[in-house]
Image 1 (tube, helix red, strand yellow):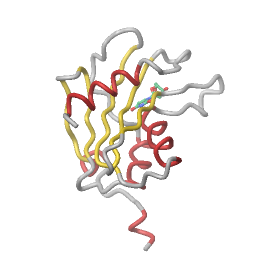
Image 2 (cartoon, rainbow, N blue to C red):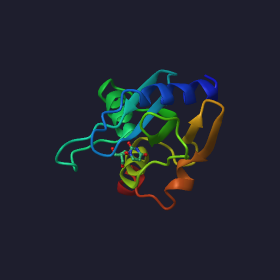
Image 3 (spheres, rainbow, N blue to C red):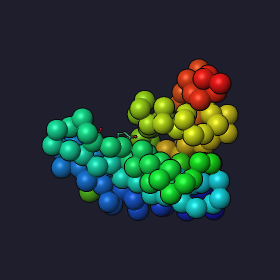
Image 4 (cartoon, protein in one colour):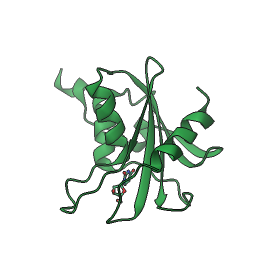
Length: 137
Ligand code: THU
């Protein structure tokens, strides 16, 4: 899949965000090793802490379906009702969830402003010296 298409799917996922508290809508499109795509959005909660980020929604949907290999994730975030005006990067908790399932050397993260406007990073850049399953072997 083209990077632009993965970016587009993250923008599409953003339309599903449930954000009555922050008004900050985030979408994610996660590519699995088999080429399948899982989309996620952020889902907030009146008690605030149970809120779930778009990236984790996508990962948890995929893991439930038995996926364990992941290649890339596109993330698009910004004030709801408008195109993203920033390159929204995953929060620390989401980076740690990526660390559980992804190779930090190869897993790619696209920070998407528009279909043809994104930054490309590796998980190792966002979570250097990360702690993961390898540490427990
Ligand atoms: N959020 C995400 O879904 N992903 C990110 O990468 C950053 C933050 C959500 C959490 C919360 O619903 C809202 O954005 C504002 O923090």
